[in-house]
Length: 371
Image (spheres, rainbow, N blue to C red):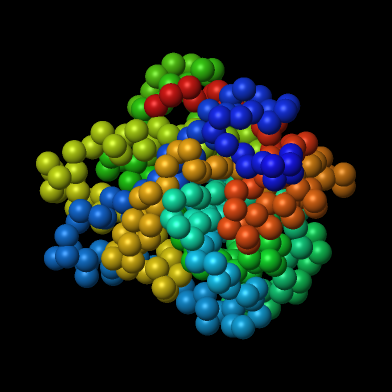
Protein backbone atom coordinates (compact mmCIF):
# COMPACT_ATOMS: atom_id res chain seq x y z
CA UNK A 1 0.00 0.00 0.00
CA UNK A 2 1.03 3.59 -0.44
CA UNK A 3 2.21 5.65 2.48
CA UNK A 4 -1.05 7.51 2.84
CA UNK A 5 -3.05 4.29 3.26
CA UNK A 6 -0.90 2.56 5.84
CA UNK A 7 -2.76 1.99 9.09
CA UNK A 8 -1.31 2.85 12.45
CA UNK A 9 -0.38 -0.51 13.89
CA UNK A 10 1.03 -1.74 17.15
CA UNK A 11 4.25 -2.78 15.47
CA UNK A 12 5.40 0.12 13.29
CA UNK A 13 6.62 3.48 14.47
CA UNK A 14 5.72 6.53 12.36
CA UNK A 15 8.65 8.82 11.62
CA UNK A 16 9.21 11.39 14.33
CA UNK A 17 7.01 9.70 16.93
CA UNK A 18 8.66 9.27 20.33
CA UNK A 19 9.37 5.59 21.13
CA UNK A 20 7.06 5.69 24.15
CA UNK A 21 4.08 6.43 21.91
CA UNK A 22 4.13 2.87 20.59
CA UNK A 23 3.50 1.66 24.14
CA UNK A 24 0.57 4.08 24.45
CA UNK A 25 -0.88 2.79 21.20
CA UNK A 26 -0.56 -0.84 22.30
CA UNK A 27 -2.68 0.05 25.34
CA UNK A 28 -5.71 0.83 23.21
CA UNK A 29 -7.41 -2.39 24.27
CA UNK A 30 -7.11 -1.28 27.87
CA UNK A 31 -8.42 2.17 27.01
CA UNK A 32 -11.38 0.67 25.16
CA UNK A 33 -12.27 -1.48 28.13
CA UNK A 34 -11.78 1.55 30.38
CA UNK A 35 -14.27 3.51 28.32
CA UNK A 36 -16.94 0.88 28.95
CA UNK A 37 -15.55 -0.49 32.23
CA UNK A 38 -18.68 0.54 34.07
CA UNK A 39 -20.77 -1.65 31.80
CA UNK A 40 -18.31 -4.53 32.09
CA UNK A 41 -18.78 -4.57 35.85
CA UNK A 42 -22.50 -5.14 35.34
CA UNK A 43 -22.14 -8.23 33.21
CA UNK A 44 -22.34 -10.68 36.12
CA UNK A 45 -24.88 -8.76 38.18
CA UNK A 46 -27.82 -11.02 37.38
CA UNK A 47 -31.37 -10.39 36.17
CA UNK A 48 -32.80 -9.84 39.64
CA UNK A 49 -30.86 -6.61 40.05
CA UNK A 50 -31.44 -5.20 36.57
CA UNK A 51 -34.54 -3.17 37.36
CA UNK A 52 -32.87 -1.54 40.35
CA UNK A 53 -29.69 -0.80 38.41
CA UNK A 54 -31.58 0.41 35.32
CA UNK A 55 -33.19 3.05 37.52
CA UNK A 56 -29.76 4.44 38.37
CA UNK A 57 -28.91 5.32 34.75
CA UNK A 58 -29.72 8.84 33.59
CA UNK A 59 -30.74 9.19 29.95
CA UNK A 60 -31.24 11.85 27.29
CA UNK A 61 -33.25 11.35 24.10
CA UNK A 62 -30.65 12.63 21.63
CA UNK A 63 -32.74 11.63 18.61
CA UNK A 64 -35.67 13.80 19.67
CA UNK A 65 -33.46 16.69 20.79
CA UNK A 66 -31.52 16.92 17.52
CA UNK A 67 -34.28 16.01 15.09
CA UNK A 68 -33.53 15.37 11.44
CA UNK A 69 -30.75 17.91 10.88
CA UNK A 70 -27.95 15.37 11.32
CA UNK A 71 -25.43 13.51 9.14
CA UNK A 72 -26.70 10.40 7.38
CA UNK A 73 -26.27 7.23 9.40
CA UNK A 74 -23.59 4.92 7.98
CA UNK A 75 -24.99 1.77 6.39
CA UNK A 76 -21.77 -0.24 6.78
CA UNK A 77 -22.66 -1.74 10.17
CA UNK A 78 -20.07 0.18 12.20
CA UNK A 79 -20.87 1.98 15.46
CA UNK A 80 -19.73 5.43 16.62
CA UNK A 81 -20.09 6.49 20.26
CA UNK A 82 -19.24 9.86 21.81
CA UNK A 83 -17.80 9.24 25.27
CA UNK A 84 -17.66 12.17 27.72
CA UNK A 85 -16.20 12.66 31.19
CA UNK A 86 -18.24 15.42 32.81
CA UNK A 87 -16.58 18.22 34.72
CA UNK A 88 -19.38 19.99 36.59
CA UNK A 89 -17.98 22.41 39.21
CA UNK A 90 -21.21 22.66 41.18
CA UNK A 91 -23.14 20.34 43.47
CA UNK A 92 -21.52 16.98 44.14
CA UNK A 93 -18.61 17.73 41.82
CA UNK A 94 -18.04 21.23 43.11
CA UNK A 95 -15.09 20.50 45.37
CA UNK A 96 -12.87 18.82 42.79
CA UNK A 97 -11.10 22.01 41.80
CA UNK A 98 -9.93 22.91 38.35
CA UNK A 99 -9.28 25.66 35.91
CA UNK A 100 -12.84 26.89 35.34
CA UNK A 101 -13.59 29.48 38.03
CA UNK A 102 -17.07 30.24 36.73
CA UNK A 103 -18.58 26.97 37.91
CA UNK A 104 -19.87 26.06 34.43
CA UNK A 105 -20.19 22.44 33.42
CA UNK A 106 -17.34 21.22 31.21
CA UNK A 107 -16.22 17.97 29.63
CA UNK A 108 -12.57 17.35 30.44
CA UNK A 109 -12.58 14.08 28.50
CA UNK A 110 -14.10 13.53 25.06
CA UNK A 111 -13.44 10.70 22.65
CA UNK A 112 -15.13 9.02 19.73
CA UNK A 113 -15.19 5.24 19.97
CA UNK A 114 -15.56 3.60 16.54
CA UNK A 115 -16.27 -0.15 16.41
CA UNK A 116 -16.06 -1.70 12.95
CA UNK A 117 -18.77 -3.72 11.24
CA UNK A 118 -17.26 -7.09 12.14
CA UNK A 119 -16.65 -6.09 15.78
CA UNK A 120 -13.04 -7.24 15.51
CA UNK A 121 -11.34 -3.83 15.27
CA UNK A 122 -11.84 -0.42 16.83
CA UNK A 123 -10.46 3.11 16.89
CA UNK A 124 -10.63 5.75 19.61
CA UNK A 125 -10.13 9.40 18.66
CA UNK A 126 -9.51 11.74 21.62
CA UNK A 127 -10.61 15.37 21.16
CA UNK A 128 -8.59 17.90 23.20
CA UNK A 129 -10.94 20.11 25.20
CA UNK A 130 -9.02 23.25 24.17
CA UNK A 131 -9.48 22.63 20.44
CA UNK A 132 -10.86 25.69 18.63
CA UNK A 133 -13.88 24.62 16.55
CA UNK A 134 -17.08 26.09 15.13
CA UNK A 135 -20.11 25.44 17.37
CA UNK A 136 -23.58 25.23 15.82
CA UNK A 137 -26.60 26.89 17.41
CA UNK A 138 -27.69 24.93 20.50
CA UNK A 139 -30.49 25.04 23.03
CA UNK A 140 -29.03 26.25 26.31
CA UNK A 141 -28.91 23.68 29.07
CA UNK A 142 -30.20 26.29 31.55
CA UNK A 143 -33.40 26.68 29.54
CA UNK A 144 -32.63 30.29 28.57
CA UNK A 145 -33.33 29.86 24.87
CA UNK A 146 -30.94 29.18 22.00
CA UNK A 147 -27.24 29.99 21.97
CA UNK A 148 -26.36 31.28 18.48
CA UNK A 149 -23.74 29.55 16.39
CA UNK A 150 -20.14 30.75 16.73
CA UNK A 151 -17.20 30.31 14.39
CA UNK A 152 -14.46 29.96 17.00
CA UNK A 153 -14.77 28.51 20.48
CA UNK A 154 -13.15 25.81 22.61
CA UNK A 155 -14.63 22.38 22.00
CA UNK A 156 -15.71 21.81 25.59
CA UNK A 157 -17.63 25.10 25.60
CA UNK A 158 -20.34 23.23 23.67
CA UNK A 159 -20.98 21.03 26.68
CA UNK A 160 -21.02 24.05 28.99
CA UNK A 161 -23.61 25.81 26.84
CA UNK A 162 -25.89 22.95 25.85
CA UNK A 163 -24.83 19.82 27.71
CA UNK A 164 -24.45 16.44 25.97
CA UNK A 165 -26.92 17.35 23.21
CA UNK A 166 -24.80 20.30 22.11
CA UNK A 167 -21.61 18.23 22.46
CA UNK A 168 -23.06 15.59 20.12
CA UNK A 169 -24.27 18.27 17.69
CA UNK A 170 -20.82 19.91 17.65
CA UNK A 171 -19.03 16.59 17.07
CA UNK A 172 -21.36 15.69 14.23
CA UNK A 173 -20.84 19.12 12.64
CA UNK A 174 -17.05 18.92 12.83
CA UNK A 175 -16.74 15.27 11.72
CA UNK A 176 -19.66 14.71 9.36
CA UNK A 177 -20.28 11.47 11.30
CA UNK A 178 -23.55 10.57 12.98
CA UNK A 179 -23.08 9.43 16.57
CA UNK A 180 -25.03 6.23 17.21
CA UNK A 181 -24.75 6.66 20.98
CA UNK A 182 -23.31 8.86 23.68
CA UNK A 183 -22.08 7.79 27.10
CA UNK A 184 -21.12 10.17 29.92
CA UNK A 185 -19.42 9.42 33.25
CA UNK A 186 -19.57 12.09 35.95
CA UNK A 187 -16.63 12.87 38.22
CA UNK A 188 -18.44 12.21 41.50
CA UNK A 189 -19.43 8.74 40.33
CA UNK A 190 -15.92 8.04 39.11
CA UNK A 191 -14.54 8.89 42.53
CA UNK A 192 -16.96 6.48 44.22
CA UNK A 193 -16.13 3.74 41.73
CA UNK A 194 -12.39 3.95 42.40
CA UNK A 195 -13.03 3.88 46.15
CA UNK A 196 -15.31 0.85 45.73
CA UNK A 197 -12.43 -0.88 43.95
CA UNK A 198 -10.16 -0.15 46.92
CA UNK A 199 -8.11 2.46 45.09
CA UNK A 200 -5.84 2.25 42.05
CA UNK A 201 -2.10 1.59 42.30
CA UNK A 202 0.18 3.63 40.06
CA UNK A 203 3.92 4.14 39.88
CA UNK A 204 5.07 7.58 38.78
CA UNK A 205 8.48 8.31 37.34
CA UNK A 206 8.55 11.86 38.69
CA UNK A 207 6.90 13.99 41.35
CA UNK A 208 3.59 15.62 40.41
CA UNK A 209 2.41 18.82 42.07
CA UNK A 210 -0.57 20.62 40.59
CA UNK A 211 -2.20 23.45 42.53
CA UNK A 212 -5.21 23.45 40.19
CA UNK A 213 -6.16 19.80 40.66
CA UNK A 214 -4.81 19.77 44.25
CA UNK A 215 -2.63 16.73 43.50
CA UNK A 216 0.71 16.21 45.19
CA UNK A 217 2.55 12.95 44.57
CA UNK A 218 6.18 12.08 45.10
CA UNK A 219 7.92 9.86 42.56
CA UNK A 220 7.24 6.23 43.34
CA UNK A 221 4.33 3.84 43.94
CA UNK A 222 1.01 5.05 45.33
CA UNK A 223 -2.46 3.62 45.87
CA UNK A 224 -4.71 6.47 44.83
CA UNK A 225 -8.11 7.08 46.36
CA UNK A 226 -11.02 8.13 44.18
CA UNK A 227 -10.37 11.79 44.86
CA UNK A 228 -6.65 11.45 44.10
CA UNK A 229 -7.44 9.52 40.91
CA UNK A 230 -9.73 12.31 39.76
CA UNK A 231 -7.02 14.84 40.47
CA UNK A 232 -4.54 12.77 38.46
CA UNK A 233 -6.69 12.47 35.33
CA UNK A 234 -7.46 16.19 35.55
CA UNK A 235 -3.84 17.24 36.01
CA UNK A 236 -2.56 19.34 33.14
CA UNK A 237 -0.02 22.01 34.06
CA UNK A 238 2.22 19.72 36.13
CA UNK A 239 3.00 17.16 33.41
CA UNK A 240 4.48 17.17 29.92
CA UNK A 241 4.24 20.52 28.18
CA UNK A 242 1.44 21.69 30.49
CA UNK A 243 -1.22 21.48 27.78
CA UNK A 244 -4.40 19.45 27.46
CA UNK A 245 -2.46 17.21 25.07
CA UNK A 246 -0.32 16.03 27.97
CA UNK A 247 -3.43 15.46 30.08
CA UNK A 248 -4.85 13.14 27.39
CA UNK A 249 -1.69 11.04 27.50
CA UNK A 250 -1.89 10.93 31.29
CA UNK A 251 -5.52 9.81 31.15
CA UNK A 252 -4.67 7.02 28.73
CA UNK A 253 -1.89 5.79 31.03
CA UNK A 254 -4.17 5.90 34.06
CA UNK A 255 -6.76 3.74 32.29
CA UNK A 256 -4.19 0.96 32.11
CA UNK A 257 -3.71 1.12 35.86
CA UNK A 258 -7.45 1.24 36.47
CA UNK A 259 -8.10 -1.85 34.39
CA UNK A 260 -5.25 -3.71 36.07
CA UNK A 261 -7.10 -3.05 39.32
CA UNK A 262 -10.45 -4.17 37.87
CA UNK A 263 -8.92 -7.37 36.51
CA UNK A 264 -7.57 -8.21 39.97
CA UNK A 265 -10.94 -7.98 41.73
CA UNK A 266 -12.72 -11.28 42.45
CA UNK A 267 -16.23 -10.03 41.77
CA UNK A 268 -17.91 -13.44 41.74
CA UNK A 269 -16.32 -14.35 45.07
CA UNK A 270 -17.74 -11.27 46.77
CA UNK A 271 -21.41 -10.67 45.85
CA UNK A 272 -21.71 -7.56 48.03
CA UNK A 273 -18.72 -5.94 46.37
CA UNK A 274 -20.12 -6.87 42.96
CA UNK A 275 -23.41 -5.18 43.81
CA UNK A 276 -21.68 -2.11 45.26
CA UNK A 277 -19.60 -1.72 42.11
CA UNK A 278 -22.58 -2.23 39.79
CA UNK A 279 -24.70 0.21 41.81
CA UNK A 280 -21.92 2.81 41.80
CA UNK A 281 -21.21 2.32 38.11
CA UNK A 282 -24.79 2.74 36.94
CA UNK A 283 -25.27 5.79 39.18
CA UNK A 284 -22.35 7.47 37.42
CA UNK A 285 -23.76 7.05 33.90
CA UNK A 286 -25.79 9.20 31.56
CA UNK A 287 -26.48 7.71 28.14
CA UNK A 288 -28.70 8.22 25.12
CA UNK A 289 -32.14 6.61 25.45
CA UNK A 290 -31.23 3.70 23.18
CA UNK A 291 -28.38 2.65 25.48
CA UNK A 292 -30.01 3.37 28.85
CA UNK A 293 -30.31 -0.10 30.39
CA UNK A 294 -27.95 -2.63 31.92
CA UNK A 295 -28.79 -5.22 29.30
CA UNK A 296 -28.09 -2.83 26.42
CA UNK A 297 -24.82 -1.68 28.00
CA UNK A 298 -23.69 -5.26 28.50
CA UNK A 299 -24.73 -6.16 24.94
CA UNK A 300 -22.73 -3.20 23.66
CA UNK A 301 -19.71 -4.25 25.72
CA UNK A 302 -19.91 -7.73 24.28
CA UNK A 303 -19.54 -6.30 20.77
CA UNK A 304 -15.99 -5.41 21.81
CA UNK A 305 -15.20 -8.97 22.84
CA UNK A 306 -13.36 -9.83 19.63
CA UNK A 307 -11.39 -6.58 19.44
CA UNK A 308 -7.80 -7.64 20.09
CA UNK A 309 -4.75 -5.43 20.73
CA UNK A 310 -3.37 -5.94 17.23
CA UNK A 311 -6.59 -4.72 15.64
CA UNK A 312 -7.11 -1.53 17.63
CA UNK A 313 -5.67 1.94 17.63
CA UNK A 314 -5.83 5.14 19.63
CA UNK A 315 -5.19 8.53 18.11
CA UNK A 316 -5.67 12.11 19.22
CA UNK A 317 -7.33 14.52 16.80
CA UNK A 318 -4.46 15.96 14.70
CA UNK A 319 -3.97 19.55 15.85
CA UNK A 320 -1.54 22.45 15.69
CA UNK A 321 -1.17 25.37 18.07
CA UNK A 322 -3.66 28.10 17.21
CA UNK A 323 -1.88 31.13 15.69
CA UNK A 324 -4.33 33.47 17.43
CA UNK A 325 -3.82 31.89 20.87
CA UNK A 326 -0.82 29.64 21.63
CA UNK A 327 -2.70 28.26 24.64
CA UNK A 328 -5.24 26.67 22.30
CA UNK A 329 -5.03 24.18 19.45
CA UNK A 330 -6.85 23.94 16.12
CA UNK A 331 -7.52 20.89 13.94
CA UNK A 332 -5.11 20.32 11.06
CA UNK A 333 -7.57 20.38 8.17
CA UNK A 334 -6.11 17.75 5.85
CA UNK A 335 -5.05 15.33 8.59
CA UNK A 336 -8.39 15.65 10.39
CA UNK A 337 -10.22 14.93 7.15
CA UNK A 338 -8.22 11.71 6.83
CA UNK A 339 -9.29 10.68 10.35
CA UNK A 340 -13.00 11.29 9.75
CA UNK A 341 -12.91 9.71 6.28
CA UNK A 342 -11.32 6.59 7.76
CA UNK A 343 -14.05 6.25 10.38
CA UNK A 344 -16.78 6.94 7.82
CA UNK A 345 -15.35 4.27 5.52
CA UNK A 346 -14.85 1.84 8.44
CA UNK A 347 -11.10 1.47 8.06
CA UNK A 348 -8.05 2.23 10.23
CA UNK A 349 -6.75 5.79 10.46
CA UNK A 350 -3.75 6.18 8.10
CA UNK A 351 -0.29 6.98 9.39
CA UNK A 352 -0.23 10.18 7.40
CA UNK A 353 -3.07 11.60 9.51
CA UNK A 354 -0.99 11.91 12.67
CA UNK A 355 2.21 13.31 11.18
CA UNK A 356 3.14 16.83 12.30
CA UNK A 357 0.41 16.90 14.94
CA UNK A 358 1.11 18.71 18.19
CA UNK A 359 -0.89 15.93 19.87
CA UNK A 360 2.12 13.65 19.47
CA UNK A 361 4.29 15.99 21.51
CA UNK A 362 2.35 16.23 24.78
CA UNK A 363 5.23 14.68 26.66
CA UNK A 364 3.35 12.87 29.46
CA UNK A 365 3.63 9.30 28.20
CA UNK A 366 6.15 8.16 30.79
CA UNK A 367 4.85 9.96 33.88
CA UNK A 368 2.94 6.81 34.88
CA UNK A 369 5.26 3.89 34.31
CA UNK A 370 2.90 1.12 35.35
CA UNK A 371 -0.10 0.22 37.45
